[in-house]
Amino acid sequence: MNIGDVANRTGLPAKTIRYYEDIGLITPQRDLNGYRRFREQDLHKLTFLGRARALGFTIEDCRTLLALYEDQSRASADVKQVARDHLARIETKITDLIAMRDTLTELVDACAGDNRPDCPILRDLGGTD
Image (cartoon, rainbow, N blue to C red):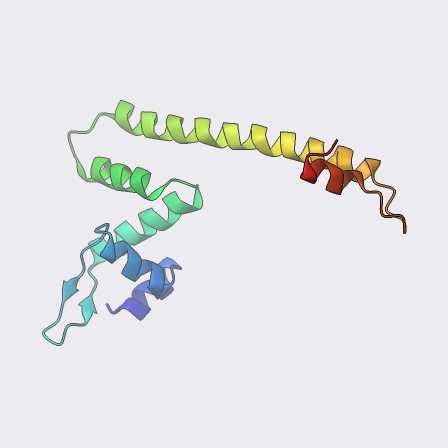
């Protein structure tokens, strides 16, 4: 398969596929003319990476998960730990986003939104409260 075929089948842009090759996540074979030739195992890895990235795993997490996936002697506890660590980061982000939303809601509610120059949003951003 060429990169266009793989891009269509995985839903990943060709640029992303080339990036994954550049950083060593996949290693497609090369024809004599230098063109990439993807095997089914490359397609499977790219589908795996696409799904992992859609769940927000970092590139390094993906590297770890791929290694664990390919290791038949892996312990599921290792996989679970990677996922658990990622989940903790997501929970922290959610907490931070809720705090941001609450602060911004207060500022928007405090702003009259009229023709006067006084604006609590700008005061807060400028640190002049």
